[in-house]
Length: 199
Image (cartoon, rainbow, N blue to C red):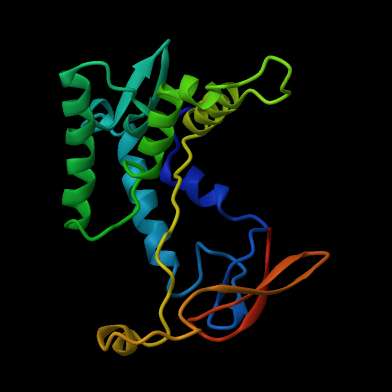
């Protein structure tokens, strides 16, 4: 596949993922109010990867395959500039208001793969896991399938005013409150709703 169109991206996230919003399970993240516009915006960005005007700005060719620029491992100043120019385009299209675009975690995975040998420091030949190979394999899977990776490090807050006053609350963080055969159960600070989440 190498690079996705917007339609392919939207189809790829219409699966059995478990997402809860305002106490209800979201059936389709591409149609749910509060989520659908973000998905549609990202899809519109991906569509530009195949437009002649933007294809060479947003993608690169390696061994005859075209990939998203976020996976380009820079080996020169020019490569770094190409990456920056690609995501400057993305920032212009959203006026800098669309966070977590592929220049973020995709770039991290690219960097981890480029330095994967570091993961095998002190690796014993008798150990079954080759972490460097695992990292390279994941990078290649993400690159081949044009994944858009992300993560979050900030816990949702129940009351931002408490933080401003220097006070804390036990209800600040997303918390695991139980576990069953289907996975973990979390307390969602946005709604206080208990809902099963996959492990």
